Each structure stands twice: as structure tokens, then as C-alpha cells.
Amino acid sequence: MDADNDTSNGIRMPAIAGAFGVDFSQRIEDFENDPDVQAFLASHAGARPLVSVQDAVTHFGQSIDTVSTGTVLSFAGRTATSSITNTACINNIQAQQRYAFGQSSVVLSGSDGFTNTGGNCVVTPDANEIIAYADLVAGDFLSCLPDCVYKDVNFIRHGLDVDGRTVVELSWHTPGTQKVRYIKRVLVDPGAPGQPAALTTFKETITFD
Image 1 (cartoon, rainbow, N blue to C red):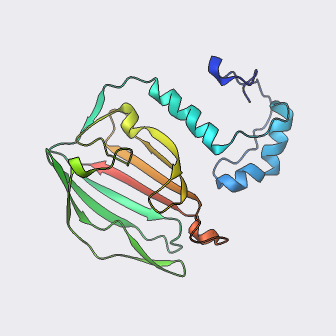
Image 2 (image 1 turned 120 degrees about the vertical axis):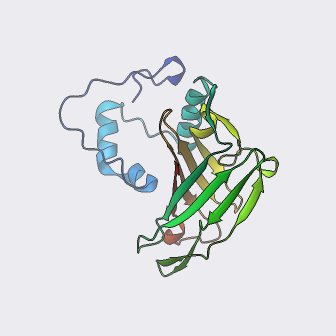
């Protein structure tokens, strides 16, 4: 929708009068094929096609990189509780995990997993785990521990996860609040071709005490 189709000089949106009938709450695949989206682009973007997910994510990430990199969160000595959901679970069950952040490691208790039987899920048994910050993999969610800057907890990424799935990941924390939100959306799962149930969305909200 950028007026001159050149994001390097900023994005200028066209003035639009009337109702705005685009549904942003739907799946990425459905959004791309939505006739209302196509009609909107035809009317307000010169009928240009949507940019790819990769291009959109890259541009958004570059925008975040221009934001101040000062520390916004120091985790050491804090505790938090997370609520975790997965759209593959049609019974709307929620897992919960507890974090105790130390100077060099984090202690996790509770569970972040589900056993799925035909869409009806149960939370996997609770387990305790100690993870040293030195063992965290760069680029993973909260690999910045124990001190994170703005772009460590406010990001969007597109690529392959450790299971070889194509995913979009995003995280955000509004300075001054007590929550960090993380979402991982599976776009392609080569291990389950043609199975829509494999294209799930994992959501975790971490709330500090």
C-alpha cells in the first residue's frame, strides 16, 4: 500500500474513505487468498500483489533494529509464570510453567507441552529443569538472558525451526509492563504434508511476579 512502493524512504499510506472490511484475525494462508484483501489491493494499491511473508518480516525486523538498544529487562532475581496454549488443542486446554531466573541459569517447573489425541489435549506431566544461560542457542526466544535489550524481546522472524518446519515467530514486551508474549506459527511442516492440523500456533504469555 506504500504510495511509491519504496519502503526505503518510509511508508506513506493512501487516504481511505468508507468502511475498512479486511479481516486481520485469519490465518496467513487465508488472508492471502481473501477476496476482500484482493479487492482492497486493487482499489488502494494499484492491484500490486501482497509482498511475501519473508519480505514483510525482514522489513519489520529492520525497523525494530533502528529502535534504541538500551536494556529494557533484567531477568536475574525475578520469578514469573507463563500460560501456554496451542491451536491444535480444540479443547482449549492451557499449560503453565514457572520461571525462577538466577544470575547464571533459570529454573523451570511445570509443563509447556501437550499430548494431543484427535485435537483433545492433556498437559504433559510437570518436570523441573535447570538451564544455564551459557547453553542457550543464539537467536532462540530469550537467548539474551539474563539481560535483554529492546530488540531481543520485540522481534518477528521467518525461517526454519529445529524440526525443519517453516515458522513465523514473534515476541513483544511493552516497556513498563509485566508481560512478555511469544507466538510461534507453523506455516509448513514437511513431516506432515497435507495435514492442516500440523499448521498450529503456539502462544506463551510470561507474567512477572
